[in-house]
Image (tube, rainbow, N blue to C red; front, side, top):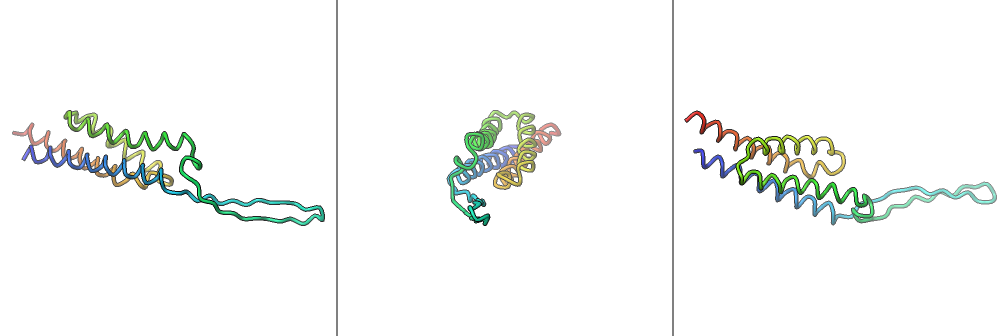
Amino acid sequence: MHKLLVRSGKFFVVIAATWAVGASLYIFFSPVSAHGVTGLMLRDSSTMVEVFTREQSWDEAQGLWGILWLVFFSGLYLLAVRVAWKGNHIALAIMSVTAVALSIVTGFSIGGAFLPAALGLFIGMLLFLSSKLLRAQS
């Protein structure tokens, strides 16, 4: 039973990391809509207002800062895979709680895409900890 829980935990962590990398790539390559209004005052004191919408890349919309956040999120989950394979349960627990918290805090921007990965990482961590508890009781 112990080995099954560990393998299941590793499976959930790998799936979470795969989801996170996929979400980062999806966000990076998806176009972002930019909406705006420009105003122009003419000589006869009339005003002309123009409403525009344009599509831009994630890099154009967010710049280097936005790219670094995507790399940070993906890196967190890839590091979690390494930590899970080494069997460091405490570090995995800290990382899973951090991932859930970051997904909630950034929920109005990119966090919603990473929330399933955060929950998968949390489930994987729970499986690891339950296997450790099961082993301690034996």
